[in-house]
Image 1: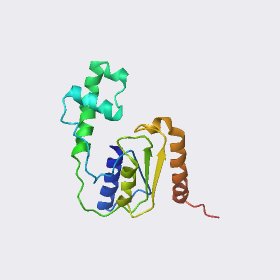
Image 2: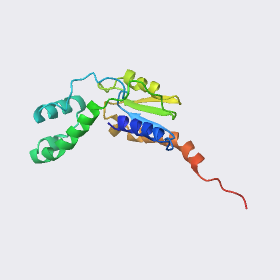
Image 3: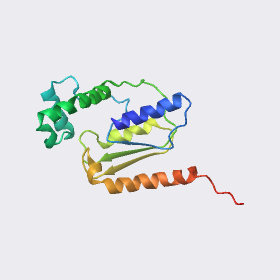
Image 4: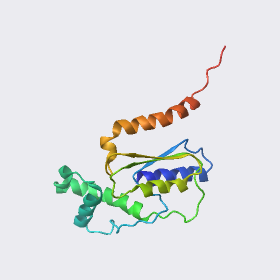
Length: 169
């Protein structure tokens, strides 16, 4: 959901004349304008919803799923997120973003194959890069250090440019 949300925020900033992000990072998601190939989750019963969330994403830890009270607290927010994601329909035609885009993904993510990551190329007229890490949809848990190193290497030049230059007296 973060990939869709961040790209739409970048577009909203552009539409209002606000400064654009210097770089957009997205992860583990097909581009927002690509249709959802999977059956909808938000319409399922709670039990089927939990089963399918776990099948697709492995997204609800057993420690949560086995406690009905805790699961009952989690489900409304999770269902609302999935509903928003599944019903989001960006315009069929829109200009690409001007900022660079980096797309991260897991090499073994069955939900987001490499073609989905590469599909983000059409979302920008700026520089574009895909970086695939070993792992599934939640690759970032095991690949935190290399992911953070990549982010740091990408952002360091931007931060250096943004620092006020010292003036000589």
